[in-house]
Length: 217
Image (cartoon, rainbow, N blue to C red; front, side, top):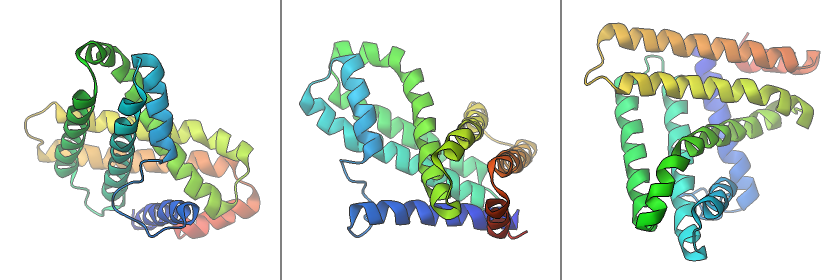
């Protein structure tokens, strides 16, 4: 568990480093409005919801913030020796509420109705965005080829989706008891171990050795 915490913290640091080099600017806690993920999703929403250019400009930073904050919260709970499951669920719920409120302020009444049917697809795509961010960091650390990245992507996306599904399930309870919290921690450990196994299968001998060093093995 301790080794996995180190790797997750390293991945988080690499994500920040990659984005910092790309921007050539000091890292700011507020995501840039031209973040590629925010721009990509806003463009898709424009087509699906018939948004104006002005609406797209307002939605980009909202989407970027949603992606960044959820990913950061996940890395925090994954890297914790004793994950605060209840705290994450509360924070995750607030992130979703704030995002929904922000989107509602931008959309017209007709667009809000369309948004309800588009939302499920949007949530799935947000998981893909989170997986892409982590793959960028992993590709840099292990010098992965594009083919390897594409082979790892399904496992990465599935792992993130299962984690969010777990927290969403627990979020339905008014209170989380000790047994549920322990179950969540075990599930997180199992998902991380399963992901590590899937990644290792795709790596070359040299990359696998480098990966083991990252894991502290």
